[in-house]
Image 1 (cartoon, protein in one colour):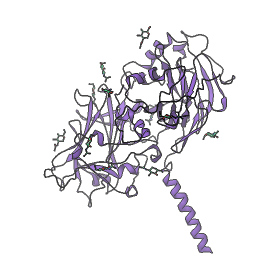
Image 2 (image 1 turned 45 degrees about the vertical axis):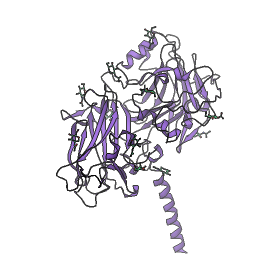
Image 3 (image 1 turned 120 degrees about the vertical axis):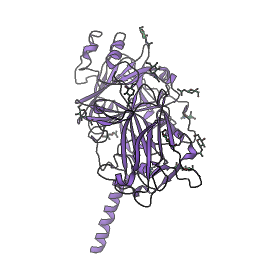
Image 4 (image 1 turned 135 degrees about the horizontal axis):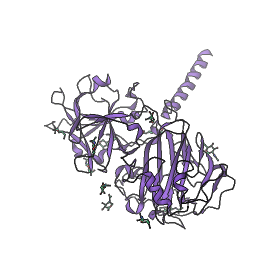
Length: 498
Ligand SMILES: *[C@@H]1O[C@H](CO)[C@@H](O)[C@H](O)[C@H]1NC(C)=O
Ligand SMILES: *[C@@H]1O[C@H](CO)[C@@H](O)[C@H](O)[C@H]1NC(C)=O
Ligand SMILES: *[C@@H]1O[C@H](CO)[C@@H](O)[C@H](O)[C@H]1NC(C)=O
Ligand SMILES: *[C@@H]1O[C@H](CO)[C@@H](O)[C@H](O)[C@H]1NC(C)=O
Ligand SMILES: *[C@@H]1O[C@H](CO)[C@@H](O)[C@H](O)[C@H]1NC(C)=O
Ligand SMILES: *[C@@H]1O[C@H](CO)[C@@H](O)[C@H](O)[C@H]1NC(C)=O
Ligand SMILES: *[C@@H]1O[C@H](CO)[C@@H](O)[C@H](O)[C@H]1NC(C)=O
Ligand SMILES: *[C@@H]1O[C@H](CO)[C@@H](O)[C@H](O)[C@H]1NC(C)=O
Ligand SMILES: *[C@@H]1O[C@H](CO)[C@@H](O)[C@H](O)[C@H]1NC(C)=O
Ligand SMILES: *[C@@H]1O[C@H](CO)[C@@H](O)[C@H](O)[C@H]1NC(C)=O
Ligand SMILES: CC(=O)N[C@H]1CO[C@H](CO)[C@@H](O)[C@@H]1O
């Protein structure tokens, strides 16, 4: 009997553990702020195991001024379920999130121009800003090759709220399908990293905004948000290989990966470290070559580059010694992975700051053998490239927030949205820029600026048109992957695609 009981409880424990671990994860880090919002939706949307709540939930949302409407579709042939609805703004509007824990947050925006009776979302041209940073400037799907735009930013929020403001361009509208605002562990993104050429520390990153432009799982499968403790997506790397025959993919079981205090599953999922590209083709006579990835980037910005390594190929310590280059510059010379990581199968990563290569609009990463190594080989397991905000505190163009808001306010009638929405873990307030920008708004607009904190009126009638859409007009290149997958990557694949 006792034995049975023991057996049963250990079985239960095993089940609990496997559920816990299988979920990847939120084991290590639980985001204090975790807003997942399905804009314009009338119901919760569950996607990859997470629940996105409507921005109008509990009907405690009042919309004043003209032109707030929503569009929804029941057609499931769109990239993601959270894109089946959108909120449309015909004047400058803000979502305001109450932030419980200051520090970096993911700000993820999903845009998919649904067909709408009253509006053409494909030709909508708009700008998105926080109080301090420009995230998108005069974006329109007309100039963009994809049918779906996903943007991920890492913003250090240093007050108790974050306002996301949507600014329609002249005579246009703005829209958004889904928004995520989620805490990031403090230790994930450093304040300082090494710049190359000349080699010097670059500090002050924590005060700047970052935008993910590439996040790649070398030699590996697509890793989706549900397999990442921080909800990140890791794309395949093959299409960026300069000479794809130069690389051979390798993989081990993800369970082999031995995390340490300095590289945890929050650094990158074990699926990333368990696969890699290596030189390793024994049939090639001359093994003295680099594996190079060529990544198109906007040359007007500087980039944060994180290279992820894990020696999953060696059978003994100190046998894998290689060089890492960013553009033509040596980033890591004679990198002896097992010495630095302490063992085989142990993750290791390094951060750099780099511009694009020379006058070109690409950034290149190369790994190649060290002449002194016993075995000529080189490895790369993962790569992240994030755009760093410029002097104008912009990630898109050279106009600062103040200019974009003022320019817009001269023309628009500012409507106000007030309301409260219950987010995934906390309350979300959806209101206009009351504090920071009221000075900017006031001269232009003296009627609707200050509004009661408590929403009083019920929702105005929405344009709840159920529309059919023509399916995914995928402008991206990977037909082999399913629509959802290629849509997720339309931005990562083509960061300059607009
Ligand atoms: C918007 O309108 C203003 C004034 O009419 C004009 O100066 C500006 O060029 C327009 N901007 C765009 C992006 O069309
Ligand atoms: C965010 O900014 C504050 C103030 O500059 C700084 O103290 C903090 O370390 C930053 N946090 C992160 C995670 O960069
Ligand atoms: C590894 O490379 C082989 C041969 O090129 C390819 O068929 C396979 O899909 C690759 N594996 C992954 C996970 O990308
Ligand atoms: C090399 O890359 C090109 C373009 O991405 C692709 O068409 C080709 O199939 C790849 N070859 C191999 C051997 O993977
Ligand atoms: C690898 O690339 C670097 C940087 O471009 C270059 O200096 C080096 O000579 C290359 N190594 C080989 C073996 O081609
Ligand atoms: C870079 O900046 C220059 C000068 O401001 C501008 O002409 C060019 O279009 C910008 N390039 C991109 C890719 O935005
Ligand atoms: C990038 O380019 C800018 C402008 O040319 C320069 O000021 C800066 O030092 C460069 N940064 C790095 C890391 O190379
Ligand atoms: C929607 O999701 C939220 C958060 O998970 C939950 O509290 C709420 O009960 C859900 N509403 C419905 C109608 O399922
Ligand atoms: C949804 O869109 C697809 C692709 O255009 C289309 O084939 C399908 O008929 C649509 N579904 C409905 C219910 O209209
Ligand atoms: C968009 O696609 C067209 C046609 O496929 C191509 O000519 C153009 O270069 C692409 N634009 C960008 C910015 O990639
Ligand atoms: C590549 C990958 O990470 N795949 C796994 C993601 O998570 C789901 C469910 O937890 C697994 O079924 C996949 O194999």
